[in-house]
Image (cartoon, rainbow, N blue to C red; front, side, top):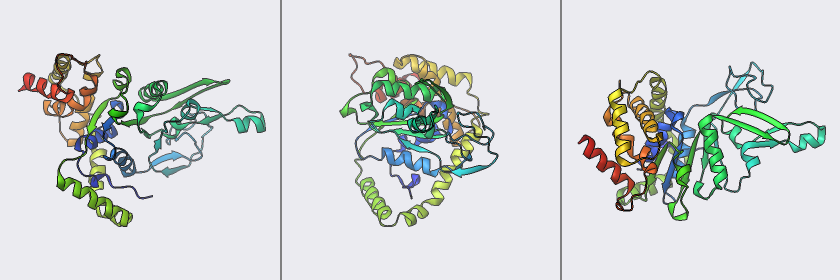
Length: 333
């Protein structure tokens, strides 16, 4: 199936940058996208997953183990052969049960053979890829909490029905939602690394460009994808360089102090703000090919790293993004 090219998405630069940062450093903790319906939230996430090169998987393994990880999952995957498969992109429906998400007892095998066996859930299918939850603000809170815990630990533990199973579950969690349909609890929202806001574009030229590209894609998806293939390859090379460079990039103490001062100035809850600022600034510097992390990288990612962590101030009705920009101006000029 041909996906809409990532490079062909018009506008929504902050959302695309947040997704690229999360692709470079999975430790960021996922991306929460708030915005109007029909603004390309799921299209961008799917396009990024389709853009990435296929991954190597141990042949016959249901848990997506990479070569070299054989035997580290509940399956006896000791094959020396491997196969290539697309980067997983798993949709989590709002009506999903906990068993469907975590995995559960394989009832068919239990009834037919009298054996206790584990049937992998959506978390296992998303390993080494993306887990996308549309309208996450309508998902039951205990499921959101569970997803965030697994996304942070990169491991899924199931203890139920006589089963004791542990397997890797490393994925980029992407949530999207419309604030008009209900807010995500602050405690849960804080667990997302980055938060971005998307709006319906006001620029007429952008709106026309969106219609033209959608029409061209619908008419001939393969030809449209080929037209944007060179631009997508540039993005892919940028991600690959970023992933390689981030291991050697250190964040100077001066930049860490800037992160702490900014987080304190805007009243961010907890210490996740500083940690995310540090990681996101480092990932952005790696994406840009910089030799060192600088204040400009920190300020570029500050709104998406902090806007969802601010305490509400009854005396200041200014939006969170404006508060961060004002604090940045006061601190750094």
